[in-house]
Every structure is written in structure tokens, then in C-alpha cells.
Amino acid sequence: MKTMMLPNAKLSTASARFQPSPVEPPQPSRRTAGGASPSLELSCRLSRRNLSKSSLLLLLGTQITLTPLFDLSKAQADTISPEIDNPPNCGNRVLTKKAFIDVSIDGEPIGRIIIGLYGDDVPAGTARFSSIVSGKAGISYRRKEFVKIMPGYVQHGGIRSYGADADRATAAAGSLQNLIEEWERGKRGERCKEIKAGSVGIVVRDPSKPPPKTKLVARNGKLEVEEEEIAVGPNGTEFVITASDSPELEESVLVIGEVLEGKEVVEKMRQVKTVRDNTSSPYFRVAKVIGDKRAVVAERGFNRPYSKVLVTNCGLIDSQ
Image 1 (cartoon, one colour):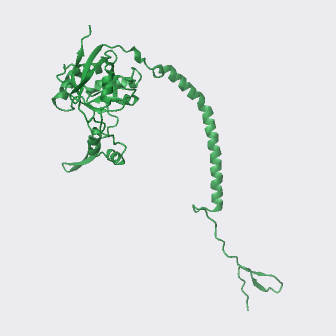
Image 2 (cartoon, helix red, strand yellow):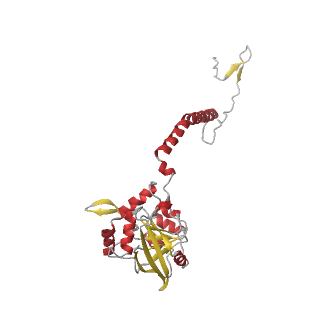
């Protein structure tokens, strides 16, 4: 009879006695949380370590190599654009005109504000304000209200942005684009843009205005994307008078003059009680982000005075 030898069998004696070798139970392979074997994990560790060292050496080499370039770029910037480091002196602006505004609170006169205008520094802004305050444009600030009272400034509502009044303002004093161009000159450092206490400026843009809301509209059997304006921007007739330094207005206001007399009148206006600002509410924030028109309407009422703060009379003062 033939004897069959199994693969795992071994002979321990000359008689070829059959003894099966013990079979070791299979060892479960260790794997990391990500499913990698120990050898692969070690390779990854070595790779990360080597990569970290290589990145550090590369960063140090890049810093050493680019440092002279950075120094050269800084020197060139100082040479090419000195006006950015040395902004124009705001004290050198010359007053060319004077205007006055009489103010009342709930029908009670509180005084007169006299404003000096920078005709040479901002000719377009000064011409627009002068034509409205004097009534030359066919419209005037007379009998118009201050619509916002903030801790640092008061804002007049200007002329409505639609109808014949807006057309007269544009025809007499030019378009809003002229004011925006003068405002951009201040952003580039070509003219003074600081808004200190007692400054008077025209509102030329609204940084908080939400972007247009896109929607699908069916026309002639096709879907078209259409943009809908959520809020109406300024039309160049609203103005502000500051009671303290207001750098936050530099992104929206073109300074055209300063208060010469009547700062106490501005202080009286700031004491008027206003509607509580609720912009910190999470509900309002969500509504503003999604473009809900109700949020825009509600925002217009924030900081609005409960009393009627009115311009009873205004005009230009003839200089002798």
C-alpha cells in the first residue's frame, strides 16, 4: 500500500513515522483606523516626516531667496506712490462758499447751522449741494426731514429718488457718477477723505445694500435669469453732519464742507429719541441675506427719530 504524504507532514525518524505539524491559527492582521496595514502606516509616517522636513527646508530657502525681492518691492512702492504714505493735508482746503440750514424739532426752532463748502477740492459735490440748498435746481431741502440720527452723526433724507424732483436734481447738478468719481479720488489718496467732527458730506453709495436678487422668469416659452434690485441706492441728495469722528462713513460719504457755526444745534438733534436698531437680531440677518424685502423696509426705520426733525429754511450766504 502506498503512503501519501501531506504537505504539512514531516518525518522525525528513519521509520518515517508520520507526524502532522501543528497548524498555527491565522493571526488577524492589525489595521489602523483608516484600514491601512502597519507597514503602510509606517511608510505614511515616514512620508509625512520627510515631507515636513522638505517643506521646512523649502520654506526657509524661499524666505531667504525672496527677502531681497520683498525689500526691493517695498522700496519701489515707496518711490512710485509716495502719495499713499503721505496723504494730502486736510487743513489746506479752502472754503469758497457758505450755506445755512435752519432746523426745528416738532415745530420748535432750535437754531441755525452755517456750513463752509470746499468748492476747489470737490467742485461737483459742492455745485450739487449748492444748487439744492439754494433752490436753484427747482427743488430744495426746505420742509424735508432728517431720517436717521446716529451717535456720531445725523443724516438728512434728501430728495426722493423718483419723479420730477429727482429729474430736476440731475438736470441742475449733474449725475451721481460725478460725485462717485470725486469720492474715488479720495480712495486713491488724491484728495483728503477724512471725516472728522463737524464734517458735512453727501451720501454717494450704500455699502450695506444687498446684491441684486436673481430669479427665473418665463418669457416666450423660455426661462430667463433676471436681476431684481432689493433696495434703492442713494441719489446724491442725502447728506450727513457729523458730531464726532466717523471713519466708518469714508466708504459711503463724499465730504464737501464743514460746520462753521451751530454745532450745538447738531447736539440737540442727537438727543432726540429714535427707533431701536435691531440689526443684531438673527431673524433680521437671515432675512437680509436671502433678500427679503421686509428686512429692507425694517432697516429704513432703524435709528429714525420719533420727533419730526425738519429743515425749515436753507440757502446760500452771500460773501462780502
